[in-house]
Image (cartoon, rainbow, N blue to C red):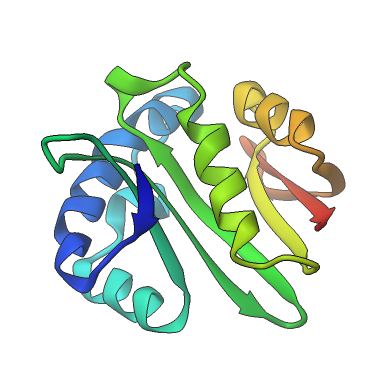
Length: 149
């Protein structure tokens, strides 16, 4: 079931974030990425400003999450994550659709590493298109993607 996260869910969501983003760090060969360094206080600040959704199973375990905030005339979607044991079952797509439903009629933007071909494939299949590639360092480029809902 996908529903709105509560403030008391934030420690579990942050723990899931640390677990889920390990695969991204391995892909990039860099463990110094912001999702692995984020502190609970920063997540709490994001929570106050935006929408957090969680995917839970019958035992109330949080196995997925996504967040978004409206800023500068667009909805910025971030931290779409699914527990590694539950990937490739459509949960990421379900979370993406659920967060989009919160912002009907808006322009959504998100970004991912250009090396994250599975992420890009998911976003493109959901109707997103790349509108910019930003070089962060010689080893890292981000694909910025958008979709008008």
